[in-house]
Image 1 (spheres, rainbow, N blue to C red):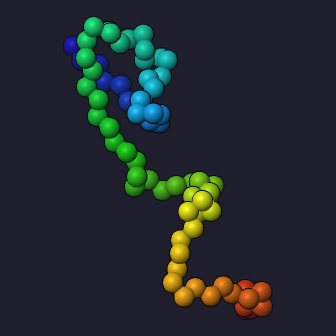
Image 2: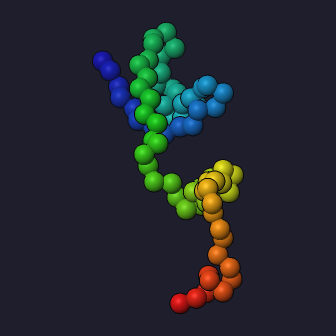
Image 3: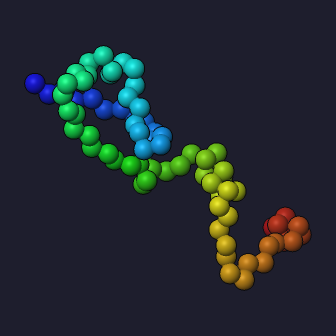
Length: 74
């Protein structure tokens, strides 16, 4: 009989950590089937999005920043 369990985890040093609540139900003598789905299409939350932009700024050719007056012009 098969049991299906779904959880989210991060990959650390090529390893996926199994949450504690599922470890006891695993039989170490049997193999498990693993299907990986990376959520690259998910919308990032604002904090991580801004952090990512600060760490990896987007270079725009011929970019000219706005002056203070242009920023507040209505």
